[in-house]
Structure formats: structure tokens, C-alpha cells
Image (cartoon, rainbow, N blue to C red; front, top):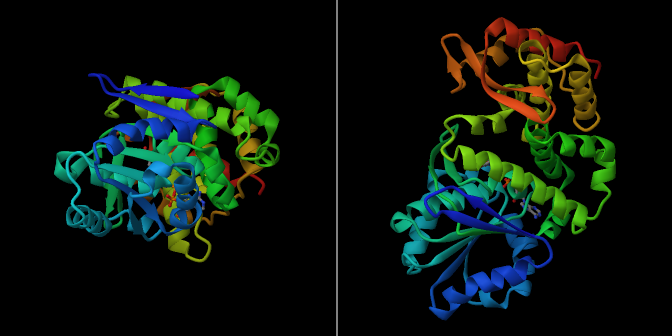
Length: 370
Ligand SMILES: NC(=O)c1ccc[n+]([C@@H]2O[C@H](COP(=O)([O-])OP(=O)(O)OC[C@H]3O[C@@H](n4cnc5c(N)ncnc54)[C@H](O)[C@@H]3O)[C@@H](O)[C@H]2O)c1
């Protein structure tokens, strides 16, 4: 399946999903090989072990490519790692026409995209995403970035890859928690933009979905559908100044949950679970502010809690959560800006909620039976 993201001024990104993806990659690489341009592949320690052998065995063109391997994990989406890659590219003679292939999850696509967009004022790069989150969300839309200290995505650019190649078979070696992280973004995408997809996911159920082999057409179609939705949203607002904000549904409260669980130590919450639980609170806000029906809210809650475990909040956690949200970049004098749902599949950006409304939504969550 082929899709494209058109962000204007002739900037068209081709996106290939499914069984013929390696043939499309071969065609894409041909001019680079012909011109004897250097090709670099950025991997982390896991994608080096699990995905690189598959890529090399499927694409003979990459036998002379140079591999750059970083450690895995969010803490490596850093200035230090970016600096190491820039030095490495320079030492190995990368020119303005060299190609960087980012093979990995959202950390590698964000980091590699950022590095490539800066090196020699921008060299060509492609993404080959290997997690569900990177396939359906992070690799598409042109946002690159690294963290600065503890602040996420503080440095970044809007810069599209030349193309994106998606092989759902890469999902086979992921653990269930990482699949669930991606699934939270899929649920979000359905809730903000596609009622039919939401209905289909509710019918299929999580157990039904994860029982289907990752190479199956069901996954190819699901990934394809999420990408089409994301492209539709990004094309209207590439630089994220308005409607693109709906993609943050669940994330404001979700980030606060994530920070709380980190502070409480022990079993910190995965990003996907935090966003999913954040969507429960933000569905309650949608009920209060933008007309989501109680029955629709309750169905969303049931669906989320059938997949993601409830996280018990103590009375004294509430002030920490509100402090986190006060520091959020979406904060204004009147309150915090939220993207909220009018109904499943239809979202509206920039709804201001004051702190007592936000607390009420967290109370709603606290009173749910785990
Ligand atoms: N640019 C955007 O629009 C955008 C959108 C959403 C999220 N993001 C970013 O994405 C990042 C999170 O991405 P993620 O969830 O993919 O995390 P990740 O890249 O850290 O990958 C999760 C883990 O899975 C491993 N892994 C990756 N592919 C594998 C495979 N096929 N088999 C086995 N292990 C594999 C990785 O090594 C890592 O340990 C965050 O930094 C977030 O800010 C960016």
C-alpha cells in the first residue's frame, strides 16, 4: 500500500506499508547506489539485534552501508548521542548527499530525523519504524527532536524524511508493554478522528487484535489507516499551531500520571498506559465541556480499562498532578488548553479548562472501580 503526506511547497513524502515494502526500498535506494553515495543506518542495540539482520537480508543494496549503533531508550534521545552521531558522520566522510536510514522506534526516528535535518544543513533521510508507536505516529508528520536534560523534545525541527518504509513483521519481536504503548496512540487516533475505526476496535477487542499475526493484512490495514488519519491532520497544520493539537488528546493528564508514577518509583507507568488513563480523565472533561454523552464516556472507560490497569491515586497525589499540569506548555491564565471530544471520532482543539474542572475529572477517575 502506498500513501503520501503532502505538506505543501512540493514537499511530498511517500509512505510504503506492507508486503512489497522492501521492493519499494530497493527502487528508492537505486539512485544513491548508482551515484556511489554513502549510506548510513542508525540503530539502537535492540533494533541492531532484531531488525537490522532482516533489513540486510531483504535488501542486498545495503551490504556496504555503515551502521551507527546507539544504546536503547528515551535517555539516549539526547544532545550527547546526537553529538556522537554528528561526529561519527563527519569522521566517516558523510557528505550533503549521503543518506541516513533510521531503523527503530520513536526514539531513533526522532533522534535520527533531528541529526539529519541539522547535519550540513540537512541531508536526505528515511525512516523504517519498528514499533507500533513509530509506525502509526512518530515516523509520520515531520517532527524531529531530542530532549534537553529532563525536558522532552526541547530541541527539534520540522523536517520530513524522503520516504517511510513500514514492515509490520518487525512488531513480532516487541514485548507486550511496547505494543500497548503503540495501541494507546491507535485508540487515540480513532477517538479523535475516526468513529468507524473506534467501532471496529471495540468489536475486535484487544485480545482479538493481539492474537492476529503481525504480518497479517489486518495489521497492515490498521497501520495504514492510522497513517492516513495522521496525514490528514498534519496536512492541515504542519507546524502545529492549531488543529494538529487534537493529536494530544489524553496526553496532558497522561504526562502528569507518568511523572507521578516516576516520582513514586518502583513500577513507573509506561507512556501508553499513562496516555490511556489520561484519556479517561479527558473523556470526563469532554462530557463536562464539549458534549460527549455519558454513555459514550462510559464505553471509552470500559474499553480502556479492559486493556490498561487502573493506577490507584492517593489523596495527596492530586496536588502533584495539578502542579505538573500547571507547568504544562498548554497552560494559560484562564486554565489549561485541552483537545476534547465532541463524540467518538470527532475532536475539537483548544478548550480551556480551569483547575477545579480538571480536579473533577481526576476525581471521576479515582472513583472508578479498578
Ligand atoms: N515525532 C513525533 O511526532 C512523535 C510522536 C509520538 C512519539 N514520539 C516519540 O517517540 C518516542 C517513543 O517511541 P517508542 O515507543 O517507539 O520507543 P523506543 O524507540 O524507545 O522503542 C521502545 C523499545 O523497543 C525497542 N525496539 C524497537 N523496535 C523493536 C523491535 N522491532 N523488536 C524489539 N525491540 C524493539 C527499542 O530498542 C526500545 O527499547 C518518544 O521519544 C516520543 O517522544 C514522537
